[in-house]
Amino acid sequence: MSTKTALITGATGGIGRALVDGFTGAGYAVIATDRVAKPELLDCQSYIQLDLGQFVGEEAYSSQVITTIKSMLPWSKLDVLVNNAAIQILGGIDSLSRDDWQTTLNVNLLAPFFLIQGLIQELQNGQGGVINIGSIHARLTKKNFVAYASSKAALAGMTRALAIDLGSRVRVNTIEPAAIETDMLQAGFIHDPERYLQLAECHPQHRIGQPSEVAQLALAIASDGMSFLNGTCVCLDGGISSKLFDPL
Image (cartoon, rainbow, N blue to C red; front, side):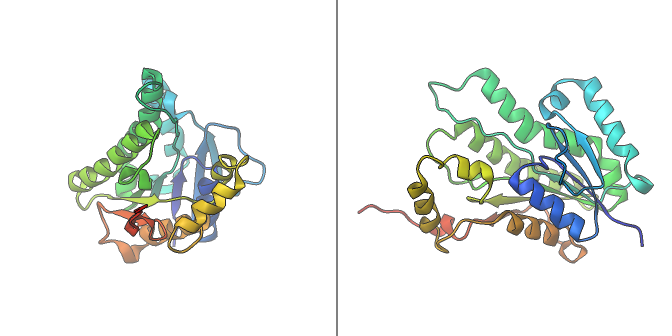
């Protein structure tokens, strides 16, 4: 039996590393990508330093990247594409610039689409699937997340639309996590650890999610036993989206 291949973007972040570890541990040959140079301890078969903004904006660069990825695929097939890379630019109506919006949409929405488009034949050859890493912000958000939340809501809509367009050719699903314990999340609370504890406690499970849990869910979705799951946005939020906050 041939080894399955997974392409994972945003591979050097907290969730990205867990995805790489999870798919590698499950026997996949992992092609990892990120905009920074490959970290020494990242355990993947291949690595591509990839700027997703440039990938969207420059057709020649995009074609080169797709050609490079295809050259790494045995038997011209891709079993799983995990669109994990994302950017979070905070700001509201008074501060978000056109560049902020374009950067957010390029990385969070358009890059996933153009990666799927460029690799559609290889995904079909592998009877493969796409897993987008979305966010709870697609449905429930808070102040100053307007660009990020809008991009993730659009990603959810694209997931459903592509599932209809592609039918039985390629499955497309999205995981929508709430707070996940990554270095990036913790850095936002470095000067206020008490608020970090409050964030954990406000979840019904009284904790924050782990990157490994995102990876395990992605592996389950990618498995042959879940082939009827298509066009679905799966919440991974510890129950917080079911919780009513009423100060009265």
